Image 1 (tube, helix red, strand yellow):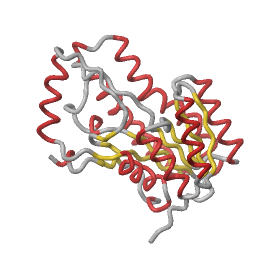
Image 2 (cartoon, one colour):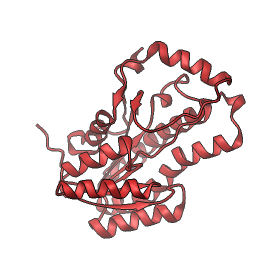
Image 3 (tube, helix red, strand yellow):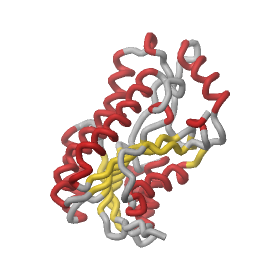
Amino acid sequence: MTSTGLSGRGVVVTGAASGIGRAAALKFAAEGARVLVADLNREGAEDVVREIGKAGGTALAVAGDLSDQQVVDAVVERAVAAFGGLDVLVNNAGIMDRMSALGETDDAEWERVVRINLTAPFLLTRAVLPHMLDAGRGSIVFTASEAGLRGGAAGAAYTASKHGVIGLVKSLAVMYRKQGIRANAIAPGPTATNISVDAAPDAHGPALIGQLIGANIGRLGSAEEQADALVFLASDAAAFINGAVLPVDDGWSAV
């Protein structure tokens, strides 16, 4: 069996105070990686660091809005200073929209969702690339979504943002494969996390999306199952996988 090769590696996981990000941070640490836990929720991020420390791992926390360039710079600087480099970036942080159809989506909803789901991973990836290029290697993994594969899994803003994430993955894979950089994504189906949907009950979008999802999804997945896929794609076990989008959805994408 191929080793994950993650022992001693420096890893940044965003949105790591809870849900899929938390599960991923714990799994990377269990593989021997040194983990920077990045999240807007300082208390939650520090809780994850303490949990990793109690298990004998190495971790540190940086709190802040990852769509802010200063926070992005702080995350990368802390990781490089603490770990001596940066081997893996997991762009996991994200928010849901209100399931709004395009005609129901106001500027605030659009800008907030795209800023967190697409602009933030762009900024962080751009910031880590020079360090990975200097090292001649690196693995960048994104949490996309079933909504990045189809039009009937979320509202207009979230769907557009996750399609954009998949575009970033494919562009990175093409542009940097000769420099030793790999970029991949998971596309989770419905998963038990604390991400919330503040849908307007009388809006057109939520009513239609609810019918489509209800007719096609399988069972509800766990954060740990999604984290397993993230860690695999980041690891040496996936060394020849680049530009892939892996559905982790109990077959929903096959329906």
